Image (cartoon, rainbow, N blue to C red):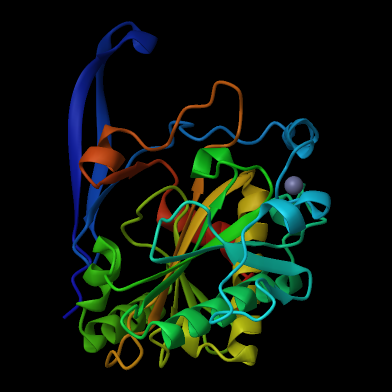
Length: 334
Ligand SMILES: [Zn+2]
């Protein structure tokens, strides 16, 4: 029922590094068992150079004038309408949520992990900081969907650092509550529940890419990744982030922190994440999370989004999912 389709391709060239002798070149094309989206797995070519440790310098250079830092946040970030929040901003622990000035969605939010943490490398994103920030997004999504019941499509997302699409250095999450799904929300919501179950069961049985469960949340390395070092998580029995209770939010925050710890250990500092909600009551839809590394912030960095990713919707990665799973071994309870 679940098709883990992959095709290995071999080409040949005359290699300048070996006196122009004929040399074989290989790649693999895979198709995602759930969405059929294709991906290319390339041999290791160093496409994503590891971090060189200059993040602190970037933090220092961007602190002055940062609208998300404690001394400015109160006066320069917008407030939610009273229908969504009496105080205008949603605070849980150190995290603070406010509307996004750029209307990416009908209800669009930004939530900082902490107004006091302008510099927050991936290895320091603790379960507490992530769980609390996720909690602000859930309170926001519940309030927005209650005030505007037609906006049923919720997602919680991250652009972490400039290469991932963030215009500000200060680490934060973004929330989206819309009357229409994104292309990918629709694609995932159209997958039959049985298909999700078979996919997970197959990966558990095979064990190569299955990383373990944190209790209620299953984690795995994506068979056909959307980008470098893609990890996926599923929360069965929950369709929308609005349905995550306190305990599940903590658990999911802990899993995301573990994933980011892995990224940090692999030498990455920038990532994207999406928690793709479907409307409450969507039968058999498990809440989907996907996250991937992005190029590290460097003055002359190479973007990991090329003609393939942007115009063909097909990622080319040189970190194999199986190697990623080996690196993750033992971190998610397996
Ligand atoms: Zn800041």
